[in-house]
Amino acid sequence: MAERGRGWARAVRGLLLDVSGVLYDSGAGGGVPIAGSVEAVRRIKASGLKLQLCTNETQATRESFVRKLRALGFDISVSQVTAPAPAACHLLRERGLRPHLLVHHDLVPEFAEIDKTNPNCVVLGDAAENFTYANLNEAFRLLIGMEKPVLISLGKGRYYKETDGLKLDVGAYMKALEYACDIQAEVVGKPSKRFFESALAELGVPPEQAIMIGDDIVNDVGGAQQCGMRALQVRTGKFRPSDENHPEVKPDAYVNNLAEAVDIILQEM
Amino acid sequence: MAERGRGWARAVRGLLLDVSGVLYDSGAGGGVPIAGSVEAVRRIKASGLKLQLCTNETQATRESFVRKLRALGFDISVSQVTAPAPAACHLLRERGLRPHLLVHHDLVPEFAEIDKTNPNCVVLGDAAENFTYANLNEAFRLLIGMEKPVLISLGKGRYYKETDGLKLDVGAYMKALEYACDIQAEVVGKPSKRFFESALAELGVPPEQAIMIGDDIVNDVGGAQQCGMRALQVRTGKFRPSDENHPEVKPDAYVNNLAEAVDIILQEM
Picture 1 (cartoon, rainbow over the protein chains, first blue to last red):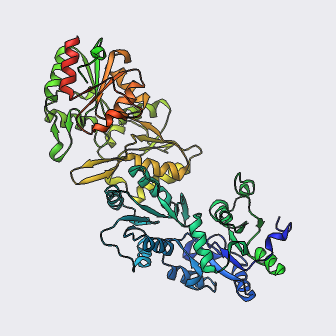
Picture 2 (picture 1 turned 90 degrees about the horizontal axis):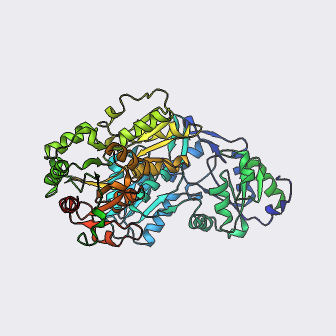
Picture 3 (picture 1 turned 90 degrees about the vertical axis):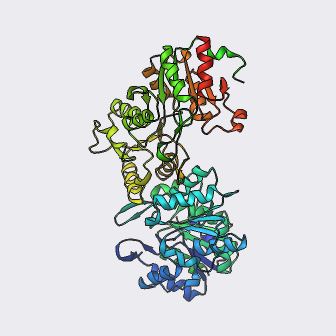
């Protein structure tokens, strides 16, 4: 597939990369790099292509997330990570919103500079152990007490896998609060167009000169294409063969992994 | 309103009554009877009309629920209460389902006779403090691991009020699990047609000879009418004036309270 019609690899100036399933597979002890990905990132940087990671990770600050990636061998800096929490902070400032946070405790420092007194919105992340009955009722009461409830959700995933089993993701709790309050949450993170646009702004490259590479056919590939980017799906991470027959989303190309994508892109430069 | 067109009160042999908002208002110390309702229940029984309570209460067994009502002065027996948990037990037996329970601990005894080994469905009630992160993940993992996940929800309320504030009701958690598993729950309780039909069976009266009296325009009035019953809305409990302009549901009559409904019905006998 990747061999055909390499027109998709032309005139590229920057790459947006999903992280989990593209750079590494999560798991015990922080996970393991996907074969060839550490070297692929090194080659991207050496080539002069611009590089930005575009992730829905909300269980850690970008700082600790980057520490984990560096420990796995990836030469990445904090400014090269676009993640939902900083995007949410931007949105909060822009609209004068003061959040009540229902997020993972490791994410709280991302909101250190944000005024959180007398909240006029709720920001929901993958709060994990913080998803208690009391915390959910508290977030609900704040929302239902607002004249016009504003719920900002850091992603809308259904569930994910950890070493001790499947866990409900933020999207499930978002749906609970949406139903109880009869509202629609605003989703920050992939596949939101605004989120990809902020990643492009940080990349410093217009959409027509950027390629998104991800393992999620809907949230990575579909979302990026709707912003005018080209998008590749890797056959690593959560990729499933049935993705190649997705009824709505068709990537510009499938590649076996990040290393293969980078091979082709660098040949076309 | 109740004065006009009393045709609705003719040829009645049995009454289904909602409880909270019709018989009593919940609150500190078990709540308080609504003025005239204790006497109205006494008059119904003295008249020879059949009487059945039809409630979505799932935070207590019928036994303890009836103890509370009797303490408030209502002459009610356990067999006169149709509640979601016994209806769910009936459904479980009928379909050979073995539930994993995520319910209030005071409700568990209702399922004492049900085989709960090797669960092949999840029964969700208003679990209150049992809605923990761990318990929700456990219910989710069981569902997602089933070839065809079966989620039975005891009601689908959005929220309710307790003396210490608003609480998320079972419907919110139902939506979370529905979204995570990409399934639709089966709702037992009002406004399910099947639930009203089982209340009618216990009442021993066909729908055309029964009247439902409730304070919830959708779950009481709309649900009962869809079963071929007449239905009245009382102007007590959660009744709001805007209910009288509901876009979809039109009661057979509005009455100020249960006492007024009983006055009119007994005059027509």
